[in-house]
Image (tube, rainbow, N blue to C red; front, side, top):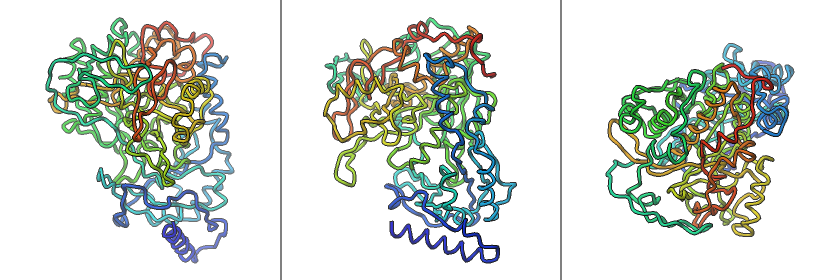
Length: 598
């Protein structure tokens, strides 16, 4: 911490010396720390200053003028018991709720002008809540933020990013600015897709049905540690989740979006091979690629996650259009993946009704202000009527021993699944019955408080849990997952070779496919779509799910939580049954609902 403060003080001193040629303004030099780490986050090392000429795009997130109004409205339009249910907002209505007052913009612009940031490089996005400063030099970024940007490398993944271990803002801006990105968020998104292996075939062993509430021992190829997973094919999934009898009827008005990052791309050639094996009536189907923030697209170098996401969503929802967003991050990680995608999608007129995201970030190394800001942007999508589903990760209640600095064991979860305004997807395995996959990420957020819609369900689980693991988790916070699907044994083609993979990053596009079909049905009936799912799922929607009551999600050298009747932090409320979910769909009609144009 001492070295960090010295660094910040040195930068501020340089600012003072460098500004002698212009009128001195005490207001802009009264710098106060906005966020800092005591040390460089674990597994990251500094490579020194970025290359000369490196620039970054800074996102200055302003505190929303009426953010509580947005969240209140989100809950109203998402709650089947509220008169405003389904009356989603327009872009203009969202902007009206969140845009800061003109005085705030004038004040922030004065700060930028003082530091010589040209107005031509400043743009406003996200309903007026975010200022984008394009092409900011490292020297200028350091001056603006009292920071010391350096190039950092992750020692395990070799990924490089431009970040700072701390930054400051003028005291007068603290009440106006929520966060600045990228700064101190070192936890870059990653998928926990388990390394795929070539398919080898083999007989399927029987399943040993576990005892309810006890850790699972699975004597079959679906066991998490076995090398011969049963094939979780589209036909198996469509049968298991009662999807075979439904034919999409609104493909011209419905779409499913897949968010792809880490320079991972899907291959249309691999998709064609996959469909010829597993969905022969859809062999001509494909997907659309949208490149965001300089995101690339090289179909000759496909990745496992992007291939699985596209192969399964196309096969499960055909002929529904599937859109793959290839999101760039700038040279040497100079921008933020999630913020870049949200910045793009919230400016679009035609947003897919359902979004699947299989990438996660460790909550332990995410600044709370950053997480709150990104979560609020997902809330905007919900207010617009978009359903967002995100994987919970594959580490159970946590990876490793989970020992904190004070010697205690603390379970942890992954963001953005912990955001209360998205639907978190866990993992299952087996059939007749399904039970929790031991990889299923689940637990309680250390950032977000528990939302009202899950208060009753989580309280019931905690009463059942009693004193077990007391002190190892946050008993007053958001619990995940909300829903689950199969997580093991997924065949996927990569460069023409068939592999098997696993993870909640596979479960998520499956649940997204089910939700997309529900939205298809609603559209075909002249109704609006489901939007933010959770208030419905924790209400009448849960009767459309198959409750999972066996298994657990071990981690942190513990047995983890156990699946029980009702909601649990292993599988949520269970797995989807399309036919039952269709039967409990809410009564959404254009006669009493303002339909958002698509």
